[in-house]
Length: 100
Length: 317
Image (cartoon, rainbow over all chains, first blue to last red; front, top):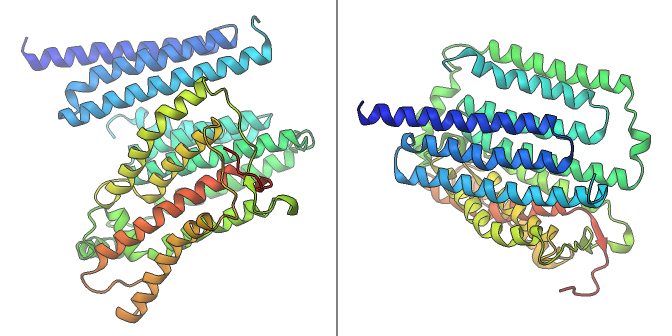
């Protein structure tokens, strides 16, 4: 097995795993019982799913500059989804009480 | 696109989300439908290769407009007008469906009727583009061949701002827009409002600067910069300035005024309004872009900040 095949296989595996986390996050968003657990499912999808997809795509974007841009996008999405998750969770707790 | 199902998926999603926005029972779910609609529309434009349009849709159509609508809905809810409006009549929904349906149908017919090869102007425009020294054809068309449209867009935004300001009661005319936001200074919002703006401002100016050669431009860049200011405003890290302040007013009109001045210069030197003298198109386009960008960012930010609500007698920290 040459290097190109190996890289392609790794891409399939990583992107496939990333898509699985998005799917799991979506199922969680639809099926989990309350706001906090739904948020938990969503932020996992953002952080892990996008991270795996970015990792899988890194060898194919052509050049270190583009790869760095992809990584920065992932970091920014992690930052914003974690913060948005915290903000929504706080509002939910204030409106619904600490335990629902 | 290779696989039919993948190119059809965004189109079907757009239709579904459009229908959802019309038929949703409450205002906020309808708005969420509209936000998602903007996101999928952005994807569809990327799929068609219209990256410039996709960026504009993401920033102005999906982002700016959605936030504006969310604010409007929140105001309605606060003033309890919503309870009267909550039951949107089926006649209104029918009208909305017929209206958007016929627009979509007319557009589809128009697009399908487009002649192949393209109409005479398209190859001609492509042939003349090098004379503007702008590599991005969208920017070339918007600022050289259809500059009047771009000028009017900038002025329409100013008119929108005047419309927003005119909602202020006489008592607070010229005061500070919106309430003073008091977020927890050590909270999550304050944290992200400190971390994100340095990155966002760089990205906004980058999107503006690459607009000459690659997808990007002043509208998209200005929206990003305005969003960073709004973030700091919502986190209580800064306060909105009184809209009667002279610096603010000057900055708002500076961009359009420079644009009009260069247009009048064209009448004198090149024989038509907004015509650029031979060999001067690139520098003049740059001057217009640089003058418009701050004006647009400030206009967008102030439209979002809302009408003045507080008297501007005291300087708050």
